[in-house]
Length: 242
Image (tube, rainbow, N blue to C red; front, side, top):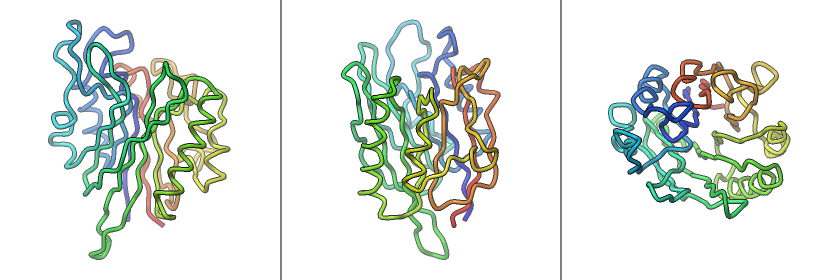
């Protein structure tokens, strides 16, 4: 059972310097990558700001002709709208909850959970998917990882699991926590190190990750053509369920 997975922080659908709306470009980039599941961070589900025209698409509009199912979790309310995490799937999707894992009052974060159902020999095989966007400060990220792993332990019952998103891992500490819970990072598996994804125009920091459990990693790549539509590069991985 093979699966192609993508993750990208889309910078609220704005270009690197916030000069233009990039949602159409992001849609086309995802279309060309042909993922089965996409994990999106900073999806601006609603925006009424006059300087952003047209308004950022709704999940329904954004996923049209690309994915059959979507699950949006609102994390941040603002005067102009709200944004959060989004999981898109070509397969049947059971929507879970969006867990509040905020470490600070000034920085709202969520852990969005969905169960993707793959049909294997006439039987639905559940794949637990978690979309994350962690805090900017190390102490907050440590607390969030403890909360994330606690949720995973309670929800997955040992079933195959994917955790993807923007980990803001400036000091490369996240993998230590994830490995203790049985997870592997897709780039680390095949190249020996996590991929540099931020800033997109000249990547220096390895912010974005895809962690998997009970999957064999077949290929990994960076979405380098996303450098002009977001401040993060995207990551794509081809997986095979064990």
